[in-house]
Length: 256
Image (tube, rainbow, N blue to C red; front, side, top):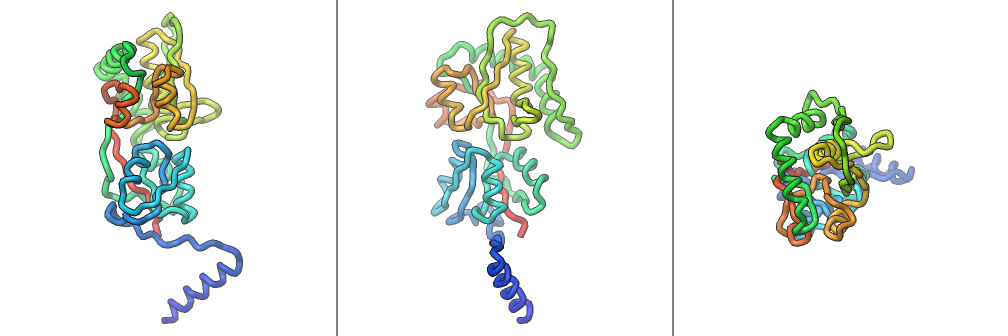
């Protein structure tokens, strides 16, 4: 009884001081998401999944980091997001944790304009990179206990003709993010290695995630590489290369 009274007094005092009390976590499994407020990056797979949850209120943000901020502030009950960015965000905030139960598994691939012959060249380059270990080597620099975050070095001996414009959303570590004014990460390195094989100069254009597919389908960008999940809905707008990574959607919640 004394503990309850003390807790009530603390809440009252915090309210009088103008401090907001962050509500306690109520999401312990995917089953608890029904009727909750879920924060997600607009256009992401997590955003799509959240929209299918019964009676859930979906808060959309341009950046995954902003969705995480809403969760920390108590404005959202959970965030649905890809596992690797989730690990980065949680490592930076002791108030958060990732639920043990994965929400969904998915495949990442590069998108290109429907019917464009570029797709065959991209697939050939990616297959070569898989066979010779280049792709695994890139991923190991960014994911895992021994990740050193050292970027891929382009082959300076290659004579390049023309450019390959890559649309991305550089807010999604370790796949793409900005550091010291440069866009770095798995997707940036992967596409640089692809350009080495195609003899192209890579140009990366940063934009909102939900602007990437329109940019590619209209021809404004040649490819989109931004941890983009293969889905039937997206296949109506763009074509995909074969997948280059397997990922998991997870649920991020507050610790308490």
